[in-house]
Image (cartoon, rainbow, N blue to C red; front, side, top):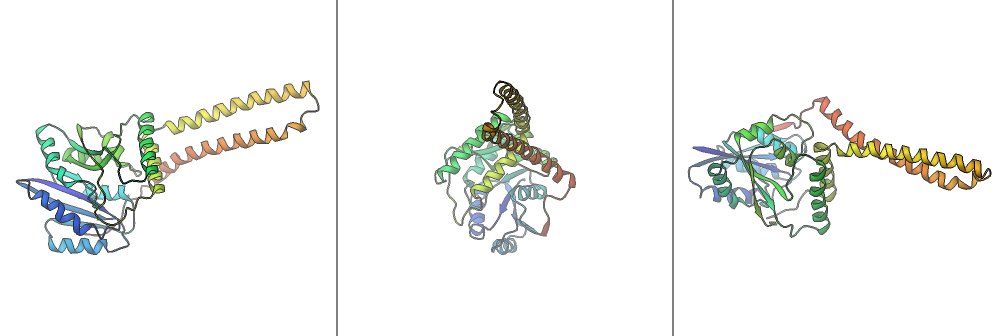
Length: 310
């Protein structure tokens, strides 16, 4: 009997965990001859999420498992922990808030088995219910990263997907410390098909993703899969140097033609110095971002620390 492992990252989701499991089980019960197990990852929750997971495990010991981190390590670490623990022939990644429709699971499985795909992902065709500014910046992010990166990331793509064991093993083999799963799913290749659906609201609770968290996540995605920002720093430095040379020539010529004009131009000179200094700091910041990632990778710390696993 084929087996599906379901990976479910959780962070402060005590209200959604009791709703998620019976909802997904209802769909699986309609699928013939499919064994499954669940891997819930408690990402250092501060509410009663872990208690709900323990309760669910005690009621379904052979089917429901949980991993509890020692602190909050982030969703990327939770996804990796789930993938490392999964044992199924197929692996599904889902959000516990049921914004990922479980009704798509039979279609995803049939597509992989009958149409020779290694992965069936999902993408939202609408962002109804999201703040307008968040939707705008999300669309801009996808446009930007697909212009500057050789790894294509589908606009609106969710982490919700079903993958073969071969693809999962390839993802696990990547040992990078800074992980951006949407990019990793695309980078490893394999034949992938996307199913489209309209945005679904959370069944309960509140999202832990703020605008600033999403912004930081998008910056990590860009720096993980593109060297273009380093090119910007290089060209900015070159252009500012060229501009400085031109301005220096202008200063020398003006001093020769108009000997007493040096004091009157101090304001423009200060502005130019500040501009060039700002550009240099910007370039240093971009380079520093990449060096910081190298530093974290070189320390070889574990991506997550498990406090409890059952």
